[in-house]
Image 1 (spheres, each protein chain N blue to C red):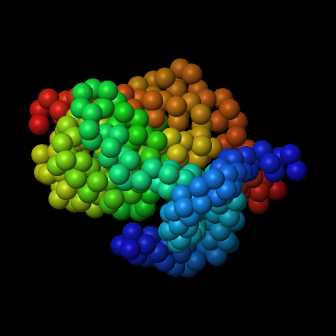
Image 2: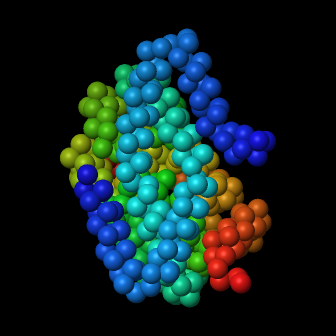
Length: 159
Length: 187
């Protein structure tokens, strides 16, 4: 909700300033926006479906079983992979991670899950490729995954 | 027709899986559908204003200015600016991709864009509040600084790599877009 207010507030301010300064340029900005929106529409619709499929098929209980019971580095890697392929709002992910931590998962595993969840996005990768290119996307997500594992190990050792 | 199918390949595949699920496991399909429709509402509200903001950004902010703020020579100030830009509460990561692409086309450094995207996804201030309350302050603080360090390192590596091996396909496609975005100025 606060996100929406922020965005629409920003838009209103920007639009007012833009219209006052130059009507023609403002119109041009709308054309650019419509073109960009149409270009990304297919990947947006696809992503929408994919998120639904993943969260519909994998229930919270399944996710918790996969990374909760087994300990050891294999569970950590599993958690990292799961974090990379799922896309869920952090408002849901943090409480889930907290409950997993309390039900016996290691810090390392939880850190791996949380970090890949926010750093790596397989679901959003098609959209990232479309807008930022294949090389950029592969490098960013690949390096992000490796970093997440390193971060998880460091956190597991320190905490 | 073929181009249309190619363009909509990803949603068509997802749609077929949905249909398959609807026949084999209607309960799961229903659950998936309700998740998707929740997200749909969110996206319908968020995307139009974001794209218009991007359009305004594209029209008003000149290439030189972005180059100065976020370009290769922007140094630490550019990195800090990218970090701040990324931590502002402005929605999910997929909103940031087109924005990052615009900045990149306007001459922002790859290193700064990596920091921007990473901060957007992993270092948001409101997100941090929730993290502290569920996972504890030490966890959240340690993750914040380790992630920041990783992003700076990743940015540096990617900048060097993409300078040596540029993404020709992406450069070509963004060239088209630039030309089609401002047709009036050509004539």
